[in-house]
Length: 197
Image 1 (cartoon, rainbow, N blue to C red):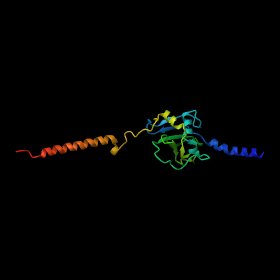
Image 2 (cartoon, one colour; image 1 turned 60 degrees about the vertical axis):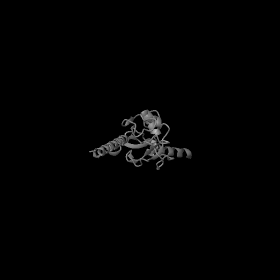
Image 3 (cartoon, rainbow, N blue to C red; image 1 turned 90 degrees about the vertical axis):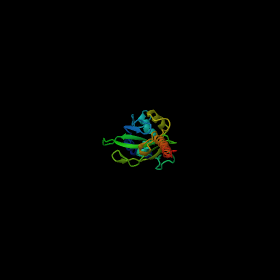
Image 4 (cartoon, rainbow, N blue to C red; image 1 turned 45 degrees about the vertical axis):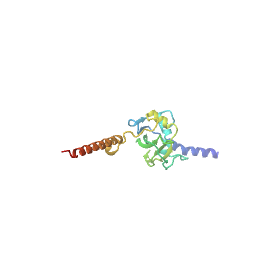
């Protein structure tokens, strides 16, 4: 009898927390190689039946937003080059009818892929996000590829260099300028050479 009472009490304590842990209504993904912010729709309560559900699961939304025991997150950034960052904006409903936006960053080309959410973002009537770094699930990269991400990390095309000029164009311009300066110098030398009388 005592065991049943304890089990019922534990369930009563857990159920309100589970009921409060609402998933996102929608999300957008933006970053290199994508044409603007790509919408991700579906059921954000978890499960892999819709694109949004797959994103919530594979990017680790629930442990990063609400926390989890045991805690799979770390507050230490993984070492090494993580590759390009992609911003995920989750729209989360609140109990007062006001939606909040939680921002998460994912690094799908890192080895292994990781996600990060800043701690202390406010949602759900003032609740702070747990935050941290989390290893992303295997389904993240295929989902992002379906949304339009390239299979391999995009390079920094048109990397803005000095004064917003493309670095390759700047190098070509420098070579042309040096060539023109040499030609002008040679022409000046020829012009100043004494002429035979």
